[in-house]
Image 1 (cartoon, helix red, strand yellow):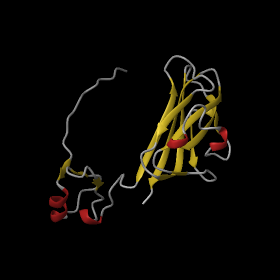
Image 2 (tube, helix red, strand yellow):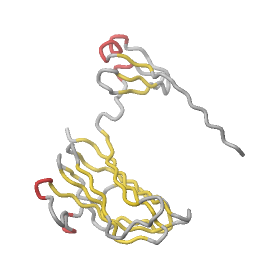
Image 3 (cartoon, helix red, strand yellow):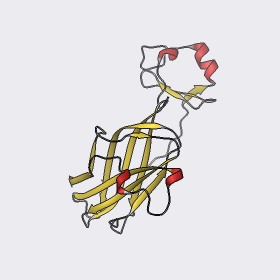
Length: 184
């Protein structure tokens, strides 16, 4: 079966926030409306007026980090580092693996947090772990869950690091996504 690739261009409905709010129409179900001056957006449900619809992405965000490449295995002890630019709470996580042979792999990792002012050689230490234990995948490509039991509050300018503690030989890439809610 051959797959053809076709490129399309399309415009999303939008305009300045004040103008869209003044119209206060009922957007169609799944209609995307972008405020061009604030870059916020809403998706219609076909029932509620624009002013009542919630903004998407207004308080939720995601922090992602990864280690490895497409060919070589991820080295044990490798780490990914991410500075956090806003105060938030981590609600859920998603851990993904890429393997060289498309077979299930295993990985065990730790997530650590330290303030930027304390970040230096050898930091953050295992004592700064956010997890009650390691996150691990055995026999699958992805794992996700709530962050119950985590030290999940992150301050602005904290540094997060993901540490690979162990992995099977076929694991070439590890990615961790943290779903966050911004502090108000």
